[in-house]
View 1 (spheres, rainbow, N blue to C red):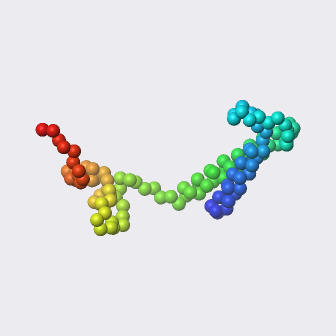
View 2: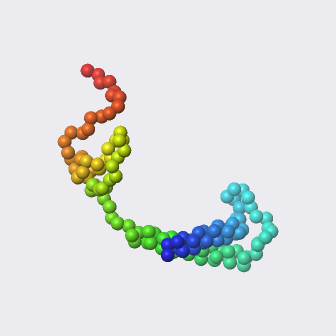
View 3: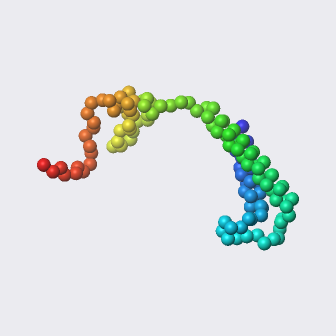
Length: 124
């Protein structure tokens, strides 16, 4: 279902880009104005404006559907609760939640770990 909506969404995006590029330029933005040529009548502008509005509305609807479908199977998680983590490679630093009990319990715990690496000289 989600793949079908993604394909429809991408087709709407391409159609919306095409319709916007077909519209007559009002000029002023980049100093490039349209002096006439292909599709200059008033009726064509109304059709392109309506087509743009319809495609934009459909784009909005498919975006909402995709976000709803993405959120259906999402399970709530918390950063503060400890979770199962894969064992780290030898010599790699320990993960933040690896001590068990979660990040909040580690922060409430005793002394912080000793810093590793070069130290800044302290004046006495």
